[in-house]
Length: 350
Image (cartoon, rainbow, N blue to C red; front, side, top):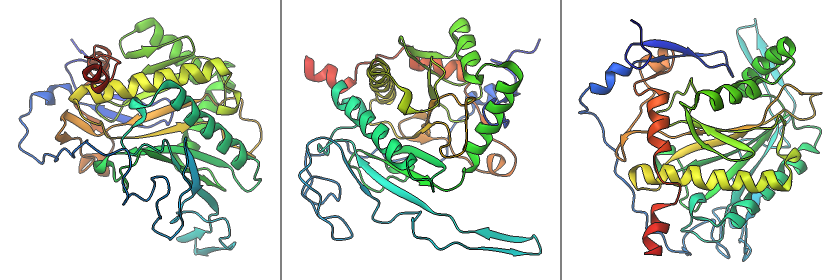
């Protein structure tokens, strides 16, 4: 008899329309491949060589202020520029390109070089959320901008070029691929059902409990049924809202709480500063009404078996479609049973 916990199968990502191959039996495969070196996690509170620490000189020669909370600035090496000239090419419909304008910003979460999100206090995380909200509002007021992507790359193996805890905001004049797919899927569902796709999905996850990791009054954190990365999670607002601008003060506090607890669980899994790419998905701006959109945040961590073994997206994943070995249900159970108090806080309190 077919069992999703034992047998190979495919799962649909309802947010994108993509499929993923799940192969639970492969967890018995011995590993003789590459292992990663775990970086030292004993950074000082201030590093005189860090481009993001208060008072230091950045790579372009700018000098950071002696900031006390979060610090935001235009990326010194932005991938998108506001003054890019208009233009396009089209050669027989085969060689096509068009100019892309945008604004890229960097957000230092804290003046303390040593503190990642799970180690910040709740008020400090709330302050970061306030910065995200303010920056979203400011960028959305620019009629050029259609999409605002708030994200964080954490850890060397995720390509993070600076160890100071920070995130980025890339805003641009068109919808990027993943957001375009999520917009189409949510719009189709909303038009058919009259309800948001993720409202119904959250209700189902709350009923089944199999993939739940955390829950509070306003948010859930789940390993999605269609998760690609081993310990992938998604934070979803219980209320059907489109952007950060609609959060109530109570929801901002609840969001800070679930962010701290989820990222603490990640660090507790292998007792390291857990690497990931994370990002907030919310409705496009200056693009009409997007009632179908439901706010959520993705976490894509690469580690698989231990702190030194990561998931590689190669071969079949690059040429066919994503594949995973451990089931989302197994990953959720593993994360759920972990403490939501950071292991370093436990040690310091003893």
